[in-house]
Image (cartoon, rainbow, N blue to C red; front, side, top):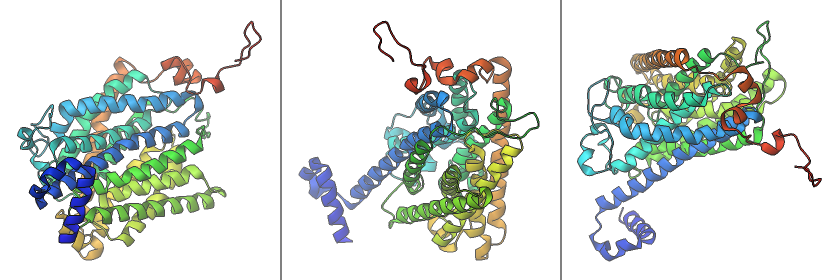
Length: 462
């Protein structure tokens, strides 16, 4: 232990030379806090960087005429989310309140005077400002998932209004119920990093938007048979998934809100990675069998579905179970994507299959696989069915999934229906045909590819 302390002290003094003057005054507790803070700040950066992964994934999975719009709205909506979460969302999610919602801590300024307003986060000594940034990153991911249901046909103005309302009226309730000391937390709901809070919440809003917006032009024939509308760049999508895979090492391990806990965050990272690997292989194989060809987008969805599924259970299950959870998620997301498409649900980036169905499976999985030793470490809920725990934990998990899905679906439907009746959700047919790049922004994301070449009076073609 002494050797570890000295090694860590030396590393921190190298990184922060100013501490050298008072090195003999640094206590083990102060050092532990510094390590925890640096780790959670790094985790927050990794999760925020997942926005780049979503931008590349969604841009590659949609058509060239919408590329600039799809990528650009990622920046816009994270900015909207950051402001709304700072004003109200963080306090509603984690502030002291009742079993339904938080009632304190609005407009956080990072001071220690406000730290007492967030008792649900008091298990970690990391500064409030870092906790805020970390939780903001999660809210931003959930909102990014929701936008999948709006892709290629929603008005830009919709992103402003629904982005604020989702961040203030939808996400905080689910976050508070499970992570903020709410009523589902009191029942022992296991959702370590957000299969329900982040992914199912965002995916449910995406599903409602998909249904209200209706399919893209040309997606279905008169007989209801779907047509393929392939994305314009699989390479961008692959790069986006790689970034998301890496970002998940902040998403799941960072949810410990500390590093000095016998390296438990490393175990969570191991489970996260192995589940993702299993999902990639399983989805590729099943697509190969189903289509007769190995489908790259299906493999990418398998990776993401596995990551979504292991997000709830990463701290509660053994590594062999993480592999099983990831494998099942990869297969589930493939077949549910096919079913939704044939059912007339045009989900351009398969948001509900990848984040919703996999989020449900991941949330339920701890009811089967939660091991006694890991439940004891985390102190949340009880062991799963396969470890002799009976159906108790599975019942709690199922209750949480059903209630959260219904709440998000109903509130999203009310908000979006009002918006549809008053301002409209969808661009005109003409605007959809020419593409949102031109109709909403006045320029193409790939101007040299989309514009017809012309020759000026000097004979120069451009």
